[in-house]
Length: 76
Image (cartoon, rainbow, N blue to C red; front, side):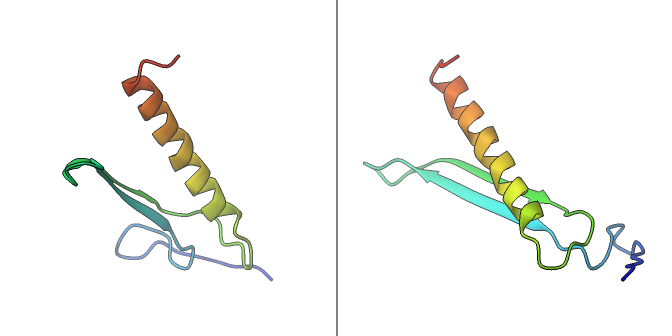
């Protein structure tokens, strides 16, 4: 089956989905917010029944968070 997807008014392809992530980091003692992050992966080629694109997005975000935390703590 061939899928033909056109860009809509939004400028993004329709029918491909997307993944987004929001995180909030709180100080455990004061419950004060010490950081927050929001990111969106617009998705890719339509692949019915596969979770690979979502898994790849979350793996990317996990690596990015680890790199940030390592940098903050001076880990090389």
